[in-house]
Image (cartoon, rainbow, N blue to C red):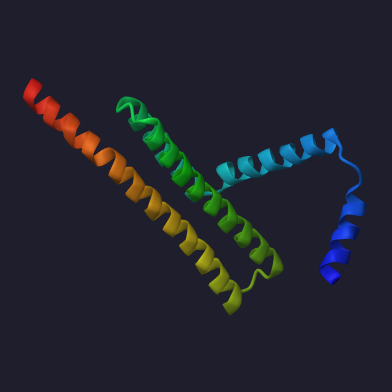
Length: 143
């Protein structure tokens, strides 16, 4: 029952629907994306790799379903990197000193990014290795 009461209180405090508030929420979200991309080296690495994947995708003219797969796994990597960064910022704010539980939380969050990145790499390999091998074979016979 407490959750229900909390929900009612939160809805009341938010007030009626407002286009201005929705636009402002998009501004906050875009600011968060900019912060992630500017300040986090791992996010920058992921974006660099994604740029290369897009170039390869255009070069090899991958299919729409392959683009969908690339989009999903790339989104998963960037999303997990964003959550990981959020957890790190919040944990560092709570206590800048070492704390065993916070260390475990950060490790699990980082591990989640690694799982997403490995999934993306496997997806990329499934899509691009046959295309690269076919291209190399074609180049070998045309030279």
